Length: 270
Length: 179
Image (cartoon, rainbow over all chains, first blue to last red):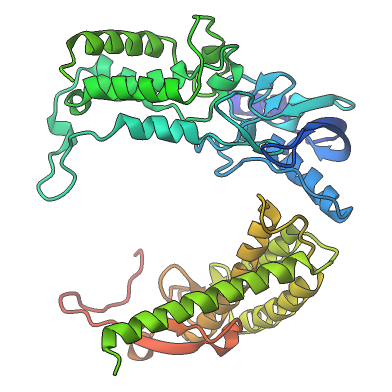
């Protein structure tokens, strides 16, 4: 048997056959920010194991609407793992049981027939619940805004980015930091509700590149100040954020942010 | 006498007020509709019509059917859609209902536009307009314009056609194919 035939045979035998499962869901319902919330129980039958976790929630919402009940509010947008909108604490883990995936990339084949699945919103003082499973993550936007601009000419005679020499190692590290989609899984996972992995990634992305060096000192000071003002906790080097981050952002970024912060505090003239 | 500027400001203010009243009425209509089917139900049915009859390859008969089917779907949507929740809270279903209402109008307009253009042009293939080898046939004599459809209320079949001529100064118009 040649390798492609073998592969096809293996696929047919093991995985691709779609099947249907029946599940019980315990989902956090909360009318608005100030209302008291609680877990509600739902039964959902005939869930295709090929559907994503969000498609399963769509199916549940369709069922609720058909019963003239109010559907469950949850965040979603691109549904291909890049926008950072989907969230959800699933069975006690951010983005569910798989590693390196967002909730939209989680499929129902990760669950078994008869499973009870707990679905909760991100929980953090800095992320108030708006409704059901939707939280307000605008604190992240304000931290980004506090970071300010990068001195790059974007109109008229722009410089070819490839004309600026950047060591390969730095470019790779900046790229890895830039992979952060700002979903907030790090904050939701952290026992201190710390946003340091997120802020570390954003600070590193620019601090590593020559284009970002001009405002680097102000940037780290302003972003850390905003982070503290938003009520995020501190880092105690547990490392849970790195484990649950769907984009595998490394703790190294927190260390880099701390170095940048220290140097900037000592040398900033403002 | 009011100046031109004042006049335009007045018109602007009036249209803002009219828009607000219309949007509020549409929100109230959805929330009080007491229908039986979800917004997604109608969205998917619209998608199926578009996919089957207003897709990459389309023909006169299919487009005419699509226009009628969308008109029927629109009536059913407004009569039978169920939108839960209230207006002054986060309400994703209401949000979706307003969008799907727009998609229905736009989908129908796309079919109307495709039907009026008696040529195969751009990424779309009118099955009636192809050469003996199955390549697209453009008609630059009669259709070298952008069709700017003017809104005449919610009915896309009543939209007004404005032709914006395409005048090429440097390129020569010629048939294009991949041969």
